[in-house]
Length: 408
Image (cartoon, rainbow, N blue to C red; front, side):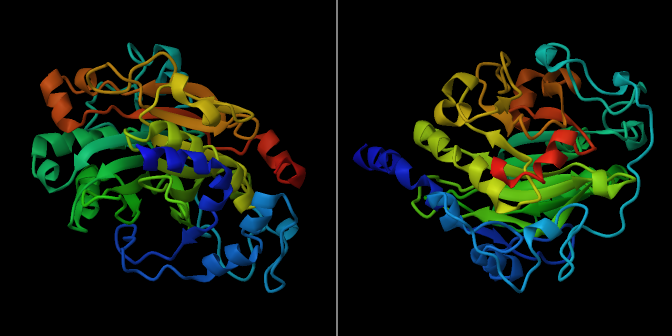
């Protein structure tokens, strides 16, 4: 108990725990693996530490002082979605229009306030099952971002076809999914899961973080995303450093962009994947309040920061995190676990900057959607997927904020 209180008293040092954003180039294959022994020192790491266009010097953030600019890089004013740095690539150059389809609201779900009873993400008005619905029914101007704690996701769960089928079908309903609680010694769990997802012709890929935790029971985070709808910045993903060890599992972050016909105007955003420890919730929630200011300062050209995952806390327990200016969370008055007794999962962002949020959210009722029993649903996971809908186009307020560095 003493050590736990000691960790919570170190809140004054919180700005230092996220000093370094470890970003590295992944290997080939289905999205590439973030190997534990893969060299993490790369061009973006040095750039962040030097305070170049990738973001201000973290020490400047903590002290409120000016940041330094590496003369070998372009200045912040010269970079951004419209003007990527010329000395290295940003997003992939080849960007095509998102899949065309009906723009009617019937192709999506009803308002999130009805999520637990009525609101479910659907990709088509067809009577086809979730397993066979075509992705072409998705609106081209909106994306669904989800979080899903797949309880103890490893070899045992992957060996059960009926469970894998439900998991794969569930993931296909979203454009990008933050996954928590991957527990496996094998590096083949995610590639095999992606094969199952893509068995119907889908084109999903993944990013995965290192194994994290203070005990032998380590976990990994991952992002699984539809490559026809979403692309990731190959120079902007990795794990945040927790210098003071305030978190059992430091966040895994990645920067994404919606695929549109006009990439310069497409919605770009950071996703921050987190799974707090159930025995350290107050201290870890407090530590997470530093994620937003640090990530918003990490790049002058990106102010959309979306934190999502298993917080092990309801909306009434966000404390410092919930009191941040502009802080918004999507799940209100709904349960997010399979037994319908807890509201632990959520999606949070600063509404002042992330105007792309449409106000639509939901909790996927796996039991009802897939016509399975409560016991079968629990075998899939003790958590349910939580999702929120965003426009594929950068909002005017976000574009304006890029020109006003004072907001950071």
